[in-house]
Amino acid sequence: MNFIKYIPLLSAFVKTWLKNKEHDKKIKEFDKTAEKLSVIENLIVRLEKKHKEINIELENLHKQIMINRTINIILSVIIIIGAYLIYFK
Image 1 (cartoon, one colour):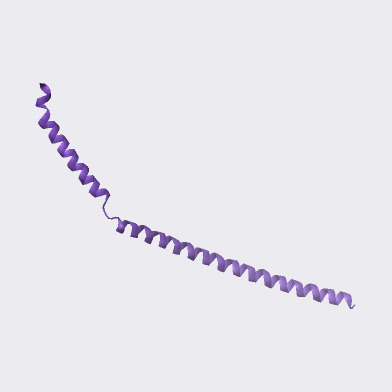
Image 2 (cartoon, helix red, strand yellow):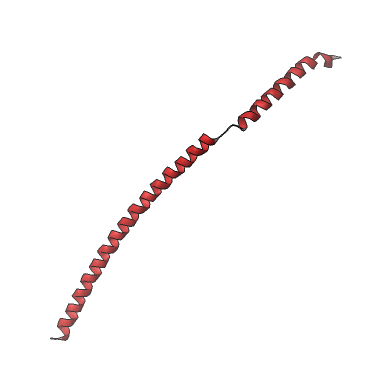
């Protein structure tokens, strides 16, 4: 008999629970386009930053290669001239 006293309370609880469940379902189905766009923009910015860093690194490597190439050419010319002078002495 005590169970009959709790039926209105139980029905109010079930009603509120179903209402909250439906509300939560609507929130989960919320359009996340703006969030996805911000993530994509963030990834693009990071990619551009990485691209700039790689370009700077490539420019530095190109400069080092040109310096080493020039040094090698100068040393080769010195060796050839030295060998020529020694050979014809």
